[in-house]
Length: 318
Image 1 (spheres, rainbow, N blue to C red):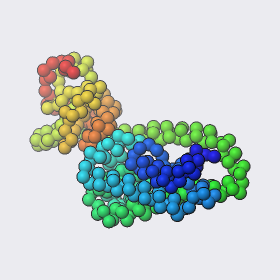
Image 2 (cartoon, one colour; image 1 turned 90 degrees about the horizontal axis):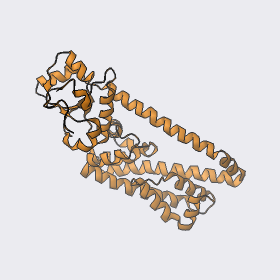
Image 3 (cartoon, one colour; image 1 turned 45 degrees about the horizontal axis):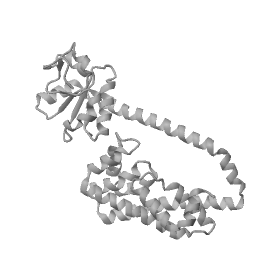
Image 4 (cartoon, rainbow, N blue to C red; image 1 turned 135 degrees about the vertical axis):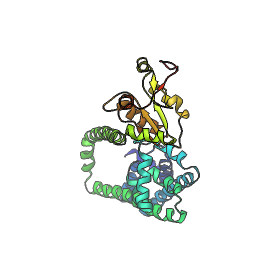
C-alpha cells in the first residue's frame, strides 16, 4: 500500500485537513500526493468523496485567508518573504501583481494550478484591497476546482486499479524513467526561466543619455558602481554620486540601498553588461524591485564625455 494511503487510513480526514493546511501555509509538504491518495481511497469506499472535498477545501480556505490578511496588513514585506521561497524570486511579485491587475478576482480561480502563483495570489489580493467577501467567493471556487480535480484524478486511477491490478505494476516499471524525465524537465525549466529573467533585465537597461537627463533634472536616483576594486586602479573615477559596492558585498551591505526609488547599477563589462544584469537580479532577490542596469556601463558613460567624480582612493576600502 502506498505510504500516503496508509496514513490516510490510519488518521483519515484529520490528516487530509492538516496536510493541505500546512502545505498551503508554505511548509514544503506537497498536498497533491495526499489528495490523489484520498481520491483512490474514495474509489475503494474507504473515504467519502464529499467529506474529503470539504476537508481539503476548508484547509485551503483557512490558509489562504491567513495569507490574505497578512498581505493586507504587511504588504510587500510578506511578498518578499514568499518570493525568496519561489522558483522565480526575481520576477514573482511583478508577475503575480500583473496577473491580478489584469484579471482581479478571476486570478484566484486558477492560481492553485500555477506553481508560484498559488502562494502569492492571496496576499496580493489582500495588499490590493480586495473585499473579503469577494476574496472568499473567488478563492473558494478556485480551491474547490483544485481539490476536486485532484480527488477526481485519484478516484479515477483507483477505479482503474480495481478493474486491472496489473496497471500498478506497469506504473512501477516506468516510475524511475518518469521521475528522471521530471527532474530533467525541472532543471531545464529553471535554466530557461533564468535566461528569460536575464533577457528581461537586458531589455530594461537604462540608456546613459536618459540617466544623464535624470541627473541634470535633479531626479532622486541612486547609482551603484559594482566594478571590482582592482578595476578602479587604472580608472579611479565613478559616476556622480555613485556608491561603490563590490558584487561580493551586496548581501552584506544591501541595507544601504533605498527601497523607495530607482536604483541604477553599472559595471565596465560591455557589450552585454553581464555583471550589472546579474547584480540587478541579485538585488531583486534581496527585495529591491526598482533596479535597472546601465547600458554600456562606465566605459560608455566615459566615451560620451559625461561627468565623472574622482574617488578618494583608487582602491576603496571594503
